[in-house]
Image (cartoon, rainbow, N blue to C red; front, top):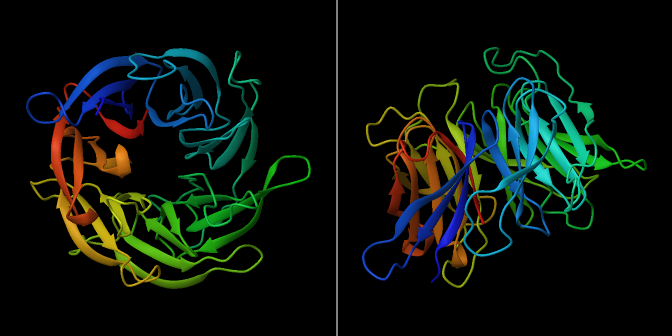
Length: 368
């Protein structure tokens, strides 16, 4: 197998390019730094263009938010990229991006705005310097005042359960809702509904399978499960379970971080949800919780917790053939590690790593 390339977002000033070789001629799998591409302060999220994987967008998570377009090699193992465009993000601290064929959709965490920019796969790449913005609604209703003083959109994805109608789902940590947005006749996005969660839950990221939506609640470290029919029908709450077998004191500022739900395949026919948990005081580092859906979509069961040896696991991503490998990073210690799925997907085994002095403050990943 040829080496695989991994791009790493970070809380530094750079996007890192790594080479992961799962089958070197001699020895164990290797993980090496190929390049470091300076782009600006805290490029914490990266996403590729759907039809041109060499075109990468990142958000600079800073008060005067920016988005940056980076062009990499057209195929094979790549090294550093070239910054080809910049624009304002339409708010403060852009922490999530969704790239469509002709539109960049941006979630600005601290200003509570969703913004869009027209884009192209050729120069000038970002077609307007002025983003269109939508302010998310906010009411102060007895929430976690330390973390929920305004709207905080934390992810933007298309509803994976309704491919016919383009609908955005936006977990909003600040208002304990997942917003549902559809496009108006003028091509702009507008709110058409929402899912409510208990006060102080803090919806962060979501995943879906079949007819079921799974929402990771950052502030209470829970996985909320909903039956999720298409609009105009309303979702139904099925259950909520902790992402830790021994939950830490609640409320807490920052625990549950990422949720992944890889598609079953020939190598891993079972269905599992993987969630990361940050800031665990255990000396063996943060955990990745693994939930089985063997009992049904609406009945996730915690079947394993894997200690990572990392501190403040913020992002992780599956890649390689049959999503065999999981790359994970510790923002506050431990560097970057690659795990291999074992036991049919029920377990993870560390097989390669890079120290924190080589890759600093990793926040997100993209298998190139």
